Image (tube, rainbow, N blue to C red; front, side, top):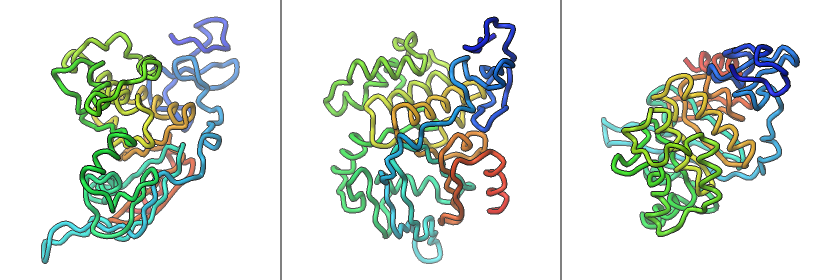
Length: 297
């Protein structure tokens, strides 16, 4: 059993699953009867105030105006995005939610230049994405954006260390040793660095993917359903890491999610429907998110 740091005996702590809005339904949560607070792994009180207001600069790292995206022509034309205006602040965790086909993934793809917008302006890390050519877009994504995918996207012939270092290797750069050690230790994968993806569990593979995205301290990390293929324990580990990277390091994270449990760790939740922003919540609870989703149905 995990010990609470304020308890003198392991028997003083009881396993719990979800007593605060920050719970991830992971068996590593404990409850201490001495102070009536929840801890993850016996270390951090989950109901303690987060420092996102300190790390946030209130400057938009992403700014989108009048963004549209149309697929197809004539009778087959589909309006995936319809005049979206959106600012994403630095140093916050923003979740984007909506039903399948609502445009949330298309929005993120346009923001980083993986899809070319039909109209509108996009600014990312001080650069106008909609004005860049393919070479400049590749450099922008390489230098300023970290990606975490649902399917991990690890190279099967490389071990964990090589996968983490791969973006820097391709760019001809060297990963900072201190930053590498900090990230892999915080994710608990320091003893798995010599293993290939086939030798890792799903949760371990996704933590390697998180390390790959974070090790260069990018301007923004885009996480597209990062826990979609994970069990509850692995989900808790990945979400805790994303939340901590924001609170401790001031990292900016934008996360596309379907489920309210995961989205409830965000500072801000944006709701998209039919290619438009239809709602927004600040510091939401799971219940508030569910209520907003019902309104959109």
